[in-house]
Length: 94
Image (tube, rainbow, N blue to C red):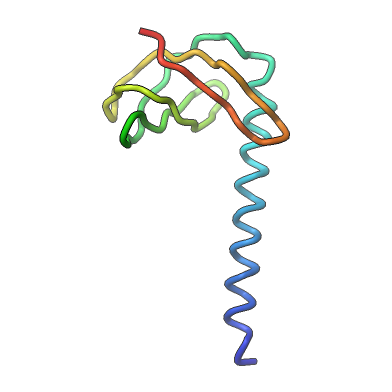
């Protein structure tokens, strides 16, 4: 019984990683046929060198590199999507 909290915390971490990987793969699958398209998105948060963006169709959260401001509406191009890795790559279109 004393080891139960550690085991539960470890299993929660594994479940969280699997859930995130599943969502990433589904988002990549939704976007794969749309590589090369331009999307109008909202910047939801900013970090050094870029920020998190929110697409509305399909509903996907991703990142983009470049100078952006939170709350700003920007245009991005989908440069790549890979289902196996769950990776999507966007670039700013100015």
